[in-house]
Length: 335
Image 1 (spheres, rainbow, N blue to C red):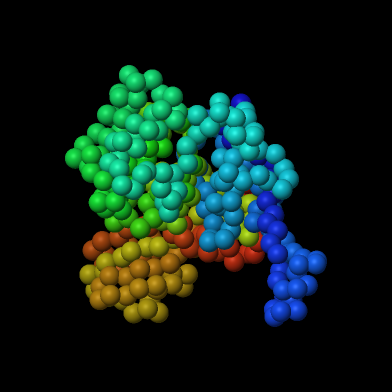
Image 2: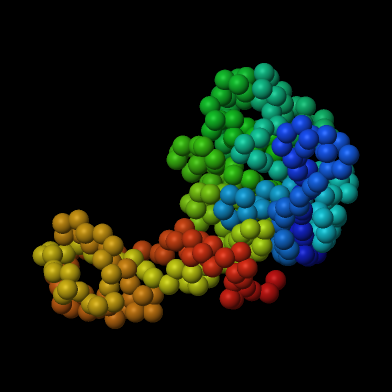
């Protein structure tokens, strides 16, 4: 059984169209015009238990709508979805006790209460045994370094501290599937790194399935081996980060520090100069010609230092989005 499985999941929103002026308002009382907008076109995916999957796409691509359907917040217009074998929009308690949703721009903690009291309320909501609850909360508080914060009113915590407390609240009932929608949004780099480290360790130790949406590519690169990309409501890629880079960012960056700077026209013809700062150069090379070009540079020039950089995930995503909403990965693996 897959942890998450969908087939042709689709969501349309219907909204009224009001004509301007008094005449339009009166007409709307008699016959109302509506318009349909498609948020998710046809989304099919299979996620194994224990996978950590990145769910990517530009703003308005349909990521949050998809997650809301998978957590039972929204009903789909058509298609099927199962999470842990259950239909999420039936909202059965057996499923709701096994999933969690963390949204970076929403909160489930009571603003005027210390976080610890919110945890106690959620313990009763999820009917977590006292011994299990105490052990799990103590561990989560220690792992996220919150021991001196959980007895402070939530309103007095920093954004990073509140997000850590939100993670504790979402995980205290031991969910098997966790949906993270922009969990590091607005956080400083130190808080982002701490949360990434915690999520990686939690996924490995607990074996829970995690679906992560984020506009911070470092989140995705550090946590997700597999990524699913959606654009204009259409699924356009499903594969590894390495596949994404190789298919949509076919160039590599070579950072070279020369002992004596060469003339640009002396470099190999396939090497494009991206940056030049005194003796340090950044060159763009075709992925299939990295070895011969690098060898030619080392043979013909005095090089003090040289390093090859991975293709930029953001560049690969921009190239993928530029293909348009109907684009589909050329090598999407079967799952």
